[in-house]
Image 1 (tube, one colour):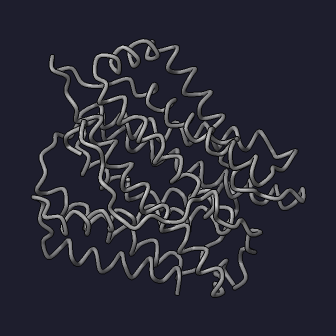
Image 2 (image 1 turned 180 degrees about the vertical axis):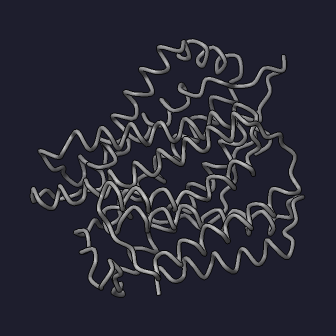
Image 3 (image 1 turned 180 degrees about the horizontal axis):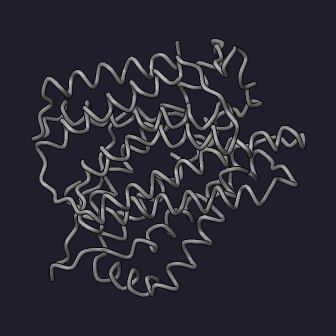
Length: 346
């Protein structure tokens, strides 16, 4: 989830099936084993792999595009800083794709809008904080390293807000994924330039806090839908969450005057507008895969996938001869994190 903004981001993985064509089965029961641990059937493993493939592909592209947008400098030396304007474009693309999905696969009436609003607000705040940290001068590798701790607040949020319990195995998997990904990202970032800032780190910390709240809200949302006998359709979840994200982004962009400043910057720098549209498309397709995964599993499983896709980015970077080199600590981290994610599908 580049350095030259005007260059289109190349395809890196084999295209996964379009999320619009993915079958949307009923969510699996959580907690089939003691302590919330569950064993996946062959069919469920295939569902997990389909969701993971889409998340990996689209968010690898998304990350490259995001980095390129905030690294870009106009001919006059000006950088893009209308972060809420970017969030609005991103959320609007998601609403569009989700709306198409609802038309094709139907929708569920009477979903708990209050929880969907809280989830959307928390997610847009988290995404804003991460993007704002890049705009504030925090280097992309350092921001990625700090965001690798995302699983911890999600698990804590699911425990406190959603009442979920985790087994020792799940906790060990989380520790392996977070620790391993942190080592790999540190190794990847050690050879790259980029300045860090205290404001940027504070913003990443805020993003992690919002992630934890969102994880708990999503868990409670699943429980509420089950109690009310409401079917969780992925495109319904995606549509309503991003609808509220778009409303929040529109309100904040208007209050901060970013609607005009963002549009003005894009008119003066058309290549940035192209990158934003591509980012919106990749984000929408990636979000479709995320909601597919959350609908069939849970937010912790989805977070494990989104965290470990950073490992795939590192492998691709090494395979393409990137200037950054992965030292022994990085390879150790890659091995540890890989064991963590393999434990989820074993």
